[in-house]
Structure formats: structure tokens, C-alpha cells
Image 1 (cartoon, rainbow, N blue to C red):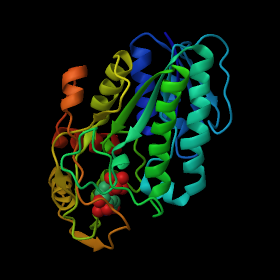
Image 2 (image 1 turned 180 degrees about the vertical axis):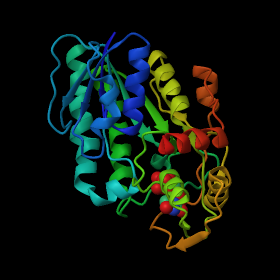
Image 3 (image 1 turned 120 degrees about the vertical axis):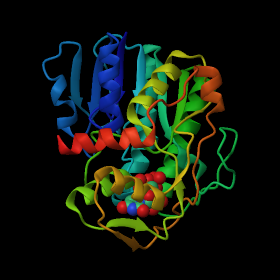
Length: 307
Ligand code: UDP
């Protein structure tokens, strides 16, 4: 197997490259290094089965030789990053996804789109099954990511229906783990960084909003199983357990062994109030469910920041 991973220098992308290489595949990793980091791939330097190409998917890409699977993960994913680069985010989701779909068409390759729980917006259904259409503010600041990814899903399905492209869509819920940038702005890197500096943890709003976290190795396993399956409609991949942001702050402080207090900051606009995946479809079709529980995963992430 010879595959392309876009967003290869990103948090999830770099772990996916590791996994595919471990499975004996040849990997071409693309990244424009706008939010991804070369250091996430440094350990792969010199590996003959891995090639890094600094490439922005907003431009077309042609591979030298055949490609079997295209994994499209390239996109700013932290709210801080996509709110700082709205047009780049929309372009990555639109032209970027189209260019990666064209790469798949040209090679008669399978195509997997990394989508997101943000497709459900501020969900009114709890937990969220794939059949829920979502509750997204189409003109709010987060829409560049939410609507961008929804467009990417629509484009993927249109290629599937009109061009017969062999496509997969994974909706990923709050993935965390080593290689998330400490200053990335997302909640677990932020809390762990603050705990390590023994400064108060920044809880946005009253902290009653919920998320369901999934450790990166579990997500990568789900992506690999989805790519190998026949399922062409979207599949949720995420941790089934919901936790409030306030509870999460306490978990981090307990694991880090610090009592540095909490500061409440303003809740960002359109911050979803509850988020929890219904993973019955992934369980049924992929025989997949997460194995790493939150406390174990936070310990591993903390150790990676210390090491
Ligand atoms: N959050 C927080 N403090 C932070 C960063 C995030 O309380 O320093 C909250 C944020 O408001 C949201 C949740 O944590 O309710 C998850 O935020 P994140 O940016 O990690 O991802 P999201 O799920 O919003 O895309």
C-alpha cells in the first residue's frame, strides 16, 4: 500500500503516519506547516518508506507513482488557530479537500475525509448519532470550521455519488494526546500547561459545558478500521464518556498533583454546551471502541510534556 496523508505534521496526522508505517505501508506526508510542526515528523527522517513534501493542499498535488489511499487531515483544528485564519480554514476545507479528492480520482484511490463533531454545532440531541443534522450558526466566527467541514463532507459525498469515488468520512470528537502544542489553545494542552506552570487553570464560562475526549491512539485505530471498511456514510469516532470542563480541570490538577486554582474567563461565542458521540455505528461496523480512559490518557500526555 502506498498512501498520502495530508496534515502529516499535525497532531493526529503525525500519529497516523506512525501507525501506517508500522503497518508496513509507504507514506507520503503533506503539510504546509501552518499549524503542523516539522518536529512531529523528525523521528521519521531517514525512513525510506516515508517522504515528507511541504505542500499546501490549496494547490493541486500530483504523486509520482500510484496511490492507494488518500487520508485528508489537513486543516487548522484548534479554535484559536481557525479563528485566527478564517479564510485559510475555509480554503483548506473547500479547495484543499477538492484537490485531495482529485488526487484520489486520478489514482482510483480510496479517500478518507477527517471531519469533526463540530459538524453537529451546538447540538440539540444528546448524544449525537450520525443521523443528527446538527445545529450550526452559519455566520458565527466558528462557522469557518463547522461549515468548512460540513462543506468538505458534502463535497466528499458528491464525488462519491457523481464520480463514483471510493470515500470514507470520520467525524472525530475532541482528540487529545502527545504532540498537541502546549500553546495550542485547546482545553487539555492549556490545562496541562497551566498545571505544569502552577498557574490557575482557565475555565471558560462556568465550566458546565461538556466534551467527550478520545486519546489519539484510539482515534488512529478507528481511522484505520474505517479506511479498511466498506462504509461510505459518516462514522463518529470519539470517547463515549461526557465530562464537564470544570470536572476536567479537577482531573488535570489531581493527576498533575497541583492545587493551582481556577480562573473563569468569558465563554467564547457559540461554544457548544454539550458534546458526546453516539458510537453505536463504529462499534457495530468497525468493532471499534476506545481503550484508553481519560485519566490514563491525561497521564500519558502529561508525561510527554515533562519528557
Ligand atoms: N476551554 C476552557 N479553557 C481553555 C480552553 C478551552 O474552558 O483554556 C473550553 C472551551 O470553552 C470548550 C472546551 O473547553 O467548552 C473545549 O474546548 P477546545 O478548544 O479544546 O475544543 P472545542 O471542543 O471547543 O473545539
